[in-house]
Amino acid sequence: MQLARRGKKHEAAAAAVALAFASFGGFQADASLIQTFGPVTLETLGAGSFTVGDKTFSNFGLVSLSTGGALASTDDSITVAGGFVDGDPNQVYLDFQLSSLTAASGQTSNVGLSFQVDVNDPLLGVGLVSLTIAAPAVTGNGIASVGESVYNGTDIFDPVVANLNTTYDGTDFGVLQQQSVIDPPSQQFFVVKDLNVSGGVEGSAKISRVFQLYDQVVIPEPGTLLLVLAGVPVLAQRRRR
Image (cartoon, rainbow, N blue to C red; front, side):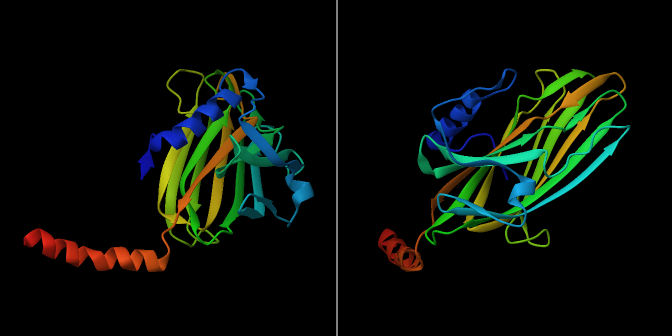
């Protein structure tokens, strides 16, 4: 289920993203983004993990493919950082920077990036994800795109709970940011990103930064949920009277 916007709280976070990651002017520092981790390269991170607030990010994987002489991305050319939007522990962001995802005329380059997210607070779950291409550079008939699938579990064999797609071709018709609801909220999920640049016949494309926002919500305790469900028949009976 795709969603353009979901509530004033997430709108405010998305607005902070727009300010901090100007679409055409590159990265602009903004006080609303509070970085608490990184940046570190995927090579340095290795098989390790890191935590931002109550979320642990682990099992990072990278696959790269290029054609036409484009430079292939490696784990030492991609960094990741993370933190909070406006210091809110329920608004966690990741910031991926790529130094070599670029394609000239007749070239293509693709990066497959995957990782696992675990919410460590048993009362909270991620209810919405947002994906942003920050400051893509495209000329001629080049194109840059980032797609993402979110699986409710630990690998690609688990159910898909969200699909996001962003693209930019140098015109005003590109989609630089997309959001998707996760319902019910998830406490453990696996993310697979597909980043692509193509120079076309006469052009170029480059992706230097990709931004991710996780918006979490409270999951009702089982006892609370049972009380709510138990009250439904009583309420229905009172209405009939």
